[in-house]
Length: 194
Image 1 (spheres, one colour):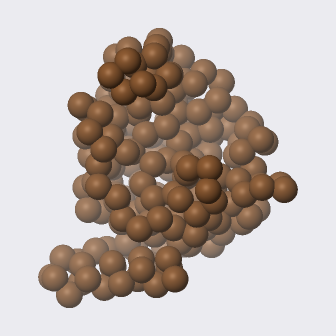
Image 2: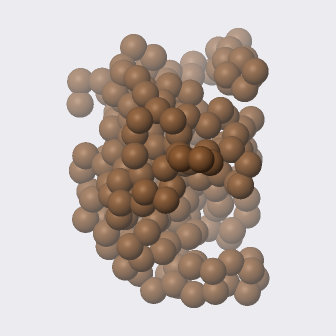
């Protein structure tokens, strides 16, 4: 049902004259993330996580990740972002997607995965980078967090992000918020020949 909702969303973009080019023939699309701390390029795995990849690419090609912040940073664990602007205003979300955490990809250092709530099928736009091997985020007797790609360039940028100073943000009532904002300036789907 969720996959059907996603297909209807893509169809609505096409009907409205907005060509939503998710590079459907590319099994391993690459996305360039220009951040305030440097450039990261990720290669996504459409073979093992097709729903998650297409969901992520929808936010990329519509510019929805541009000028968002990495709002949660935990040293030697994760760097999370994609959901809030610089003022911590929540960005709009599409429908939640099916949890593809059982796809065989592991939450290992250098991978990108979808953030979710405690319920399994609640991922929509927030994502995170694993800064270490986080086996506790893989599926087992409970649903895990769906990995859908890995960093192929800029792993040192993520390492630097994970080392920034963080604190509790009273206005948002959140822990692990970077004291200096880390901005995702622009996300771009790279041409298949890249």
